[in-house]
Length: 128
Image (cartoon, rainbow, N blue to C red):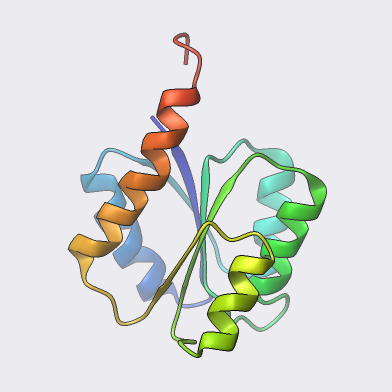
């Protein structure tokens, strides 16, 4: 079962995303800030990070850059209200595998998560 970390400073958004993912049988954890996310990434194996851009300490771009530069084999989906083309390009250039803007349709969100994790599941050893 793929492990997913949701990184968003809004508790309601984290809870809503967690609900969607748990219905899809994903193992879900949460972080309320970029700093907390980096701590959790360093201590745990996550297959996918779902990261908001706008957070009070380290923003989602910083988290994405850290994960990419540190060489973690973790997929990243940016999930944010920042919809400008410059923001989308920046996120993807920093190492994000997908970029979805809020508000979003739950069906599209789950389809994108499934697409990212399907590739992960195919690469997992049979013992996991």
